[in-house]
Length: 240
Image: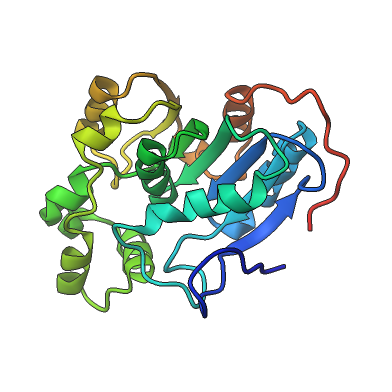
């Protein structure tokens, strides 16, 4: 069911899955990741007593603007709409790929975000050392091009330039950030992890095997669930 919350006229919102919003439950927002692998994770989170909203990335969802420097504003908009009946503090965000990048930038400005989980989230290297594009697998380049609306490698370089999460932003993140580290992730060089470790006040790193880092993987679901406090109220609602 596609929704249209508080966004500019003519831009459909990229929400595609939601559950537990009828009760005053703590909110989990999931951004990015392939739809095909996410339902088992979303259902698990809802079963643990959370209100859950899953959103595609700006630029990936049909009719939305390309992923850009202001795309992080998606998260405050989702919180404004869906956390109205739940506690206004302690919203949890799970971000895959650029969804994790978006979550970090949002957490720097949005104090209602209490925890952030990232998996495969680029931070700086991809955006500042644009020669890395030459080493990316075709699939990763295609995802970046689709999200940013770039029609070629040169345009993709221009679209990615300036998107790095700055040291000032990282220092402003008050949320606990749990980082899923995928071995040899082409989007996340070791320097990105070192930057997070150095500048975030509260960062927890968890190594994930490449084959076990997809949204449908049991190890990932267990790690994400363990990083969220169990809600006192179990959700009994079905996803809508």
